[in-house]
Length: 65
Image (cartoon, rainbow, N blue to C red; front, top):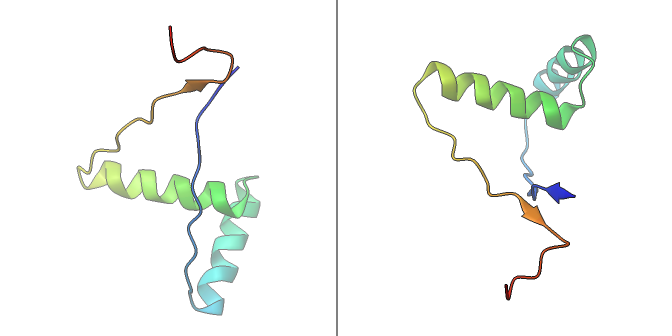
């Protein structure tokens, strides 16, 4: 099964922004992490910032072949 790797992002924001993010995520039935990803993709799309696709890896594939 192919899976994309993820990475960790840690940052500090004001409590009221965190609460607004939590509320937005809850309204969209998303996790906070997924909501942040959606917001970043939306911003990049609106501002012409390309997001490079990460290559999928298959754990069952022998890299020597």
